Image 1 (cartoon, rainbow, N blue to C red):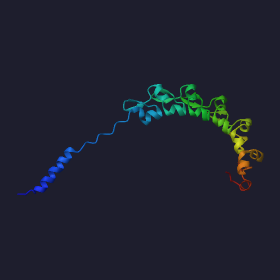
Image 2 (cartoon, rainbow, N blue to C red):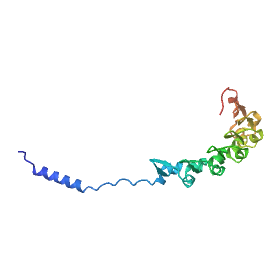
Image 3 (tube, rainbow, N blue to C red):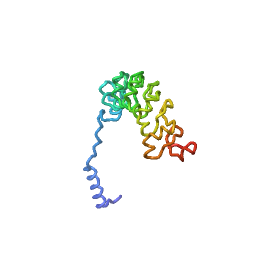
Image 4 (cartoon, rainbow, N blue to C red):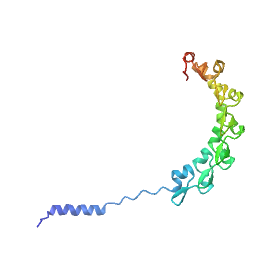
Length: 200
């Protein structure tokens, strides 16, 4: 017969009592659906048949995909650009000129889309060509910030480029950084222009 130690029994009893009284750690609270990434980012705020879908326009309108890309209307379970108004709500319209809805996406369909955008003011890409804005007229390059700052004053479609030393000499990068020679479409220092393939 096995003899049990009184001390061992006492320790075992104490351990059992401690385990019985140990507080139960609650499960972490479930994150509300509207606070989760699929809802906040993509407007997919409704659970249906085991999947998350965008059910109403309001879910899309409050999502990042509307603020950034203009996909502000709910169709077939996802957020899309249904109207030009949707596109004009998006950052892509203000920055890249993607202001017209076509095939549920935002595109640059007219020169007017591009002319109001940052890429027109900065890079002279003010003409619509396919889905995007490109440089298509020399005057757009001359009027751009890229011309004043970096000498990108000439048209080399679909972008503006430094085509002559004169383009560079009139730029801020010439006066501030000594980049006064045109090479491969950019303004560089004189010694860099003498080395083929070198650009800033």
